[in-house]
Image (cartoon, rainbow over all chains, first blue to last red; front, side, top):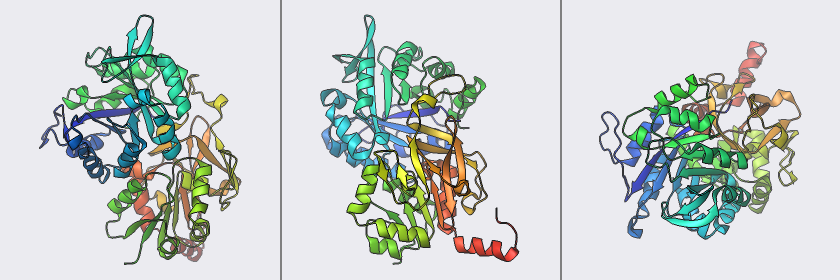
Length: 251
Length: 228
C-alpha cells in the first residue's frame, strides 16, 4: 500500500540552513548537505529545501547545495523559493532537484505553472499555497503571508491542478509557527477538492498532529521543520507513532 | 574510454539523478548521459529513463533519431527501462493515443478515476506518488539482495498492461494490482524510480551494473533446472 510521506523542510539562506538543526554530534548545524544526509539516514521520505536568500548575488548557492545533496542522497528532493521563470525551474532540475515548488509566481504569473508542467512534466511541478482564514473561507496570501490576493484557496488549488501542478504544498499561515497543529478543515477542503496529492504544512507541534493531518486533513504527505530540527522527535519515532495509529508509512 | 553504461538522453526529465545514482553504486564504471546513437550503440549497457508524457517522449525519440538504436540495444545488451522508459517499450499508450516502440506486446493505461478508492472508501490521488511495496513476481538477478515487498518511490498516472503474464517481474497495489516491473532476456524495466528509492533502489541499480543476462541463461541451461 502507498505510504504517507514525512518530509522535513530546510530553510536555506545564503547557502546555510537558517534554523540550526539539533542532531547529536552534528559537526556543522548550518550545513545543508550534512543535514540532508542525516535526514536521509533517519528515514525521511523526501526533502524540501526552501531558499529564502534575499540577495540576488547569492541565489546560485542553492544550486551548488542541490548538486552536492543529489550526489549522495537518493530520495526525492524538492526546491522552492524565488522561482520566477521556466529558466529557474530548468536550473534547479539540472542541479538535481526532482521537483520545483512555485509559490508567489504562480499567483503573479499562472502561465508559468502551465509552461513549466508542459515542458518538464507535472510530476516535477509543486505549487505552494499559503492560505489564511478570512471570514468564512480561506484566502491565498503571498510574500510569506503578508500580501492578500483576494483568491479563494480552494478555487485556486483546483485551478493549479488544471494548469498542470502535480502536487500542492499547502501551508496554513494561521498555524505556521504556532505548534498548535495543522488547519485540518483547510487541508481537508483542498485535499477533497482536487485529485493530486497534498502536502500539509504549518503548525506541527507534536506527533499526534501528523496523524491528524492524514486522518482528519486527508493529507497525502506531512511537512514539518522545527519538531525535527530541534530534536524533539526523530523521523523514525514519528513514523512508528503514525503506524501505531493505523497509518501506512515506510519504516 | 569505453562507455560501460549509456543513459539515453532524449530531453525527458532529470537524468542527472539516474547517472549519479549509478555512479554511486558502480564507481569504477564509465557512465555517460548521451543522445549520440553511436555512443549508445557502443555502450556495454543501456539505461532508458524518462519522465513526462508519452506523446512527447515518442516525438523526442524520433526527433533525435534514436528509435532504431534503442530497439537494437533492447535486443542485444543489458537494458534497463525506468518510468516512461518502461511504458514506451509497449505497443500503445492511452496517454495522447500514442503508438510506442512495440518491443513488448501490451498497452499503457491510466489509473481509472472510478476505481481510485482505498479499502475504507477514501479517495486515492493520481498521480500515484510516493513509496509503495513492490512484490517480486519472479526470481531475477536484479532483485538480488532486495527484500520481497520492499518500498520504491513512484510517480506516475499510467501503468503498463503486458499481454503476456510471463513478462511480469513485479507488481504493486494502487488499489488494484498493477505491473511495476517486467523482464525478458536482457531487458528489465520498472515503473518506479530506483534512482530515488534509497537503499532498495541503489541495490537494484548495482545489480544492473553487474548483470550478465547471457550467463544467467546459460547457467540455467547447464543445470537443467527450471530457471523460474
